Image (cartoon, rainbow, N blue to C red; front, side, top):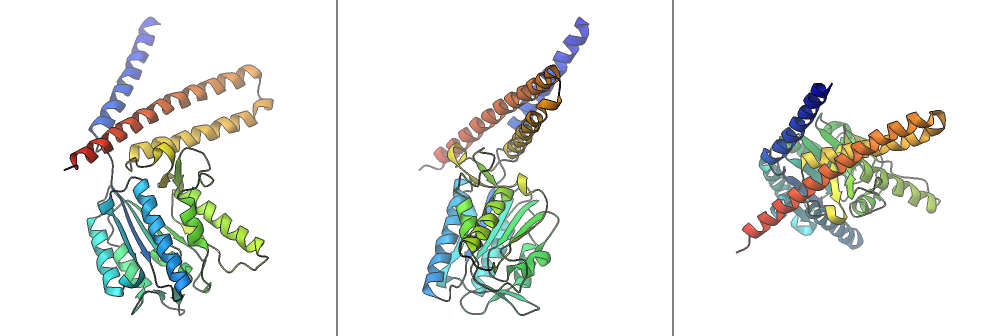
Length: 323
């Protein structure tokens, strides 16, 4: 019996050492790369709003750990078809397979029954042209948010196995100016959007927050909803788009993201267990609860250690870049 316990302890120790070594030798973090465009407003009010919203998305990306050089912001009269496609292709070319790539379009769009167009000064850029550029992305984690009117026209066209696509409308026929971008931006800095209160906002959380807020505004106005957002793609709960509190400014890190996702799952398990308390014998309930709480405590410690490692990495990077 003693020998068996000794072997089990050795196995546990080896696993812990393996985890430590894996985190130590793996790359500190994958890069977060964000490309955001504020399109043509048509009216001064819309133009100003689109510029502000695009800038807010870029700022949220930097808070989420993206390096300044990896955040591309285009907006206003400076944007035209050639500039947009050139910069988008350059962004795509710089992205690596291990990176997280986020592309956001804010503004007006149109659909003629065959082709979606993103409205910019001069000739518009088509959905097919944008889609062709996006198809060159090698990143295994991709998010594309099209918050324009008629954006639903490209939801299926832009969908890929390793890409999450969010559109402000369900189809190309919803042509009115959208409200979705306003609440998507709000979600990126909102503790309300952070449903599980872990100081990160995932794609799933941001989308659900924005979609709910849009619906609420139409109800408050006693108006018929003219937009219905949609989301396509797998695992939106595993893709972090914003960091709050002490999580802000930490580098994007796959290991930390997985641990945070695991933490959410354990917390949900605890809530489910509490819901079954009345149906379980007291001894069984407290035994199961103790096991899960111990598991959560161990995971919390690993998360804290990973945060400390990433904070040190970012501090070291900052000092090395200081003249």
